[in-house]
Image (cartoon, rainbow, N blue to C red; front, side, top):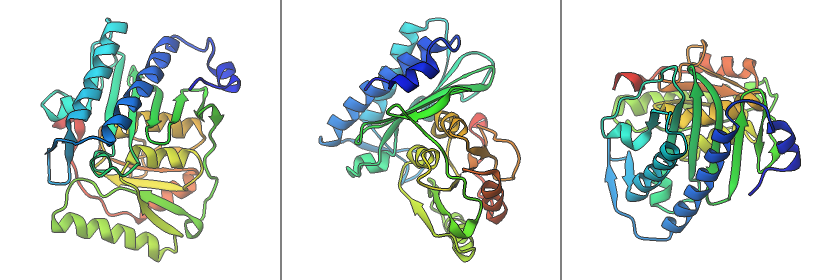
Length: 290
């Protein structure tokens, strides 16, 4: 799956992170092969923060592959934020050093049930600025990429967000999050109800925040919000959405804080603000305080 000639023209010789980007693409494709094969095999499933927060041996295998290969190729890079390492106690801190932010399988619950909305996500930041994102939709073999200032693509075709500003004409995506206590579920359902009362065309939950954000970047949905997603769900997709012309911000309406475990994204600022104003907050803490 090579970039198209249009994409090659955009990315060729554009900055100091070309090799990093190309390696991330190749690793995402390799990870996708592993995940597709594992989908058909028996899985050993464990839980993390809740009964709905799942992990498998394939999550660990893919994460180990990506991190070990990146360490070999870029020995001066010492900062890695990866989902399963963080779950095992590794610190989740974004510094000014080159930092890789990795979700080995986004949609692990889907993966366990062989539901096909499954992706691997690799983001890269320098000086706390997101430089590029690579997301591979494994079962459909769609490769989403974005580089700061260089556009966003899916399998070489340039992405463009929806320009919808009217919530009454919007398709909105979200995810439930791992908390399932009665108070959290009450607020989650109340937020959906508020959007439906505002006459949104629909609210969808697909089980992969990373791919939901890619659908937003491609113009297939108009907005996305979530409480309880993590920086590894968001980093790569944020670059892709911004480069497709979209907005990614905090649910308060302020600038995005990658560690805040909350986000609103949309094709237009007007839509993002409307969504943010409709939401009641669910507190998941911060990634960098866990």
